Length: 547
Image (cartoon, rainbow, N blue to C red; front, side):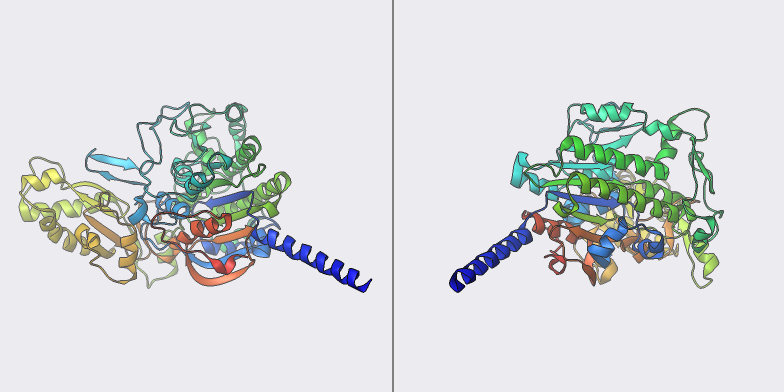
């Protein structure tokens, strides 16, 4: 009897061990990647007391929180950030150096996802595809490994975000154009009926004339400072201060309304509803396979650009985003089960404060603004003074954007100058402007002939066939931007320090303070779902947060 009882106990213990082992190695049914555009890490601490139970707090209570996660590259733009998240590589490998760059063969600027070969469905806007992306996303690797069994779907308001997260082999990629969600013929020949139904339901137009006001009492927002400040512009009829009427400044629905709608929190609410429909109709996480769903919330970025990180508008948007996340997670739990999912939340970049506000708070700093015209004027003046006025071209510069300056080859040929000869005049002239922390030539970057942390960041944002002749890094608290609002793109902490949160299957909860890279996201999730990342992956697996 004792032997029988002992054998039974041993048998039951063995079952428990086998069951625990199975649970520990079980892959999730759904990997849900969430990118909240322009979400600085400090927002999560600054506004945490106003979050609900199961939005951001889902990660803080039962997930992994990497408090010192940063981008390692220099050009902190939307396209570059999302390419890093999805591929585990930087621009020097994946080729996405910025949102736009100058193509010398086409003699014009190109979008990071522009492609005239693939027109959009139900829209006459420029074609789109991921053909400029030179590295495989984790979704591409999953499709290569599992084929038709697994699905990869990506959704955002921005085509850049949706395409560069979804990658080349995604089953479906959707973004918002004009008044509807659409895609390009690279991914689909036509929109599914459920997408057509969503577009025609009137949901997107239902917010016309609605008011965006503070979700909490006015006094709560005092930590952000005053609502009405200089250097904030009225965009799409929203006005500079609360409350904001979402009508585009018109009495009827026009293109301006859809612009205002995207800039408001209502944009995120409708995007979340569209995500729910994707989960239902694509049966994501509800089949015998591992699926990936990318969701990019873009409205936060547009609001941050206009009003700045110290505005009540940004605070209200973050709090409302928390509510949207809670709704999404409740839906995922109901349809799939959160314990069957791995959820990752991060951002593509941060944002600096309005330089004028910094100057008011601290007399020891000298923040400021420059723009494309100012840079071109200095270069044209310096080169013309040295080599004479041009007859064949209007300017010595073809294009300036996102830290890259492209010199005009026609102008150089007229004066029989090499690029390096022109650079010897351009670099000192730009240095005298007093706004640049560092300036590098194309040859310096191509040869790796630079040192220091800023130099390493610049190298990660450099790709020979796409980068400019001169690469610049602004001083801290300086903007390459117009007379109002703010802009990201530099390598300083306010731009590179973003959240990195994990939750669910395969994740060991905890607060992790070690310095990590956003390039670690893709290889870490690849480890969870047992997919190999091929090519030159620059991130590492964050084993410390894995079960």
